[in-house]
Length: 79
Image: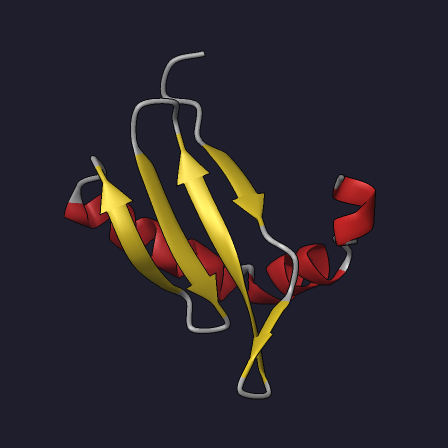
């Protein structure tokens, strides 16, 4: 389907005692990757500025759900 945006969430990572996860958005041609709980897009290939802003707002709005998704990922199950 054209214009369908897929999102994936990584498992929880820990660095310097701080937990975070990555959230990726793609439509098959463009890709952006953000980080929670910062709710900021770190890299972007092809999305317009207003689309990146929408993705950041989405991460802020859905932060609790995204954290639960990340916490529910077990790396051994993914292999």
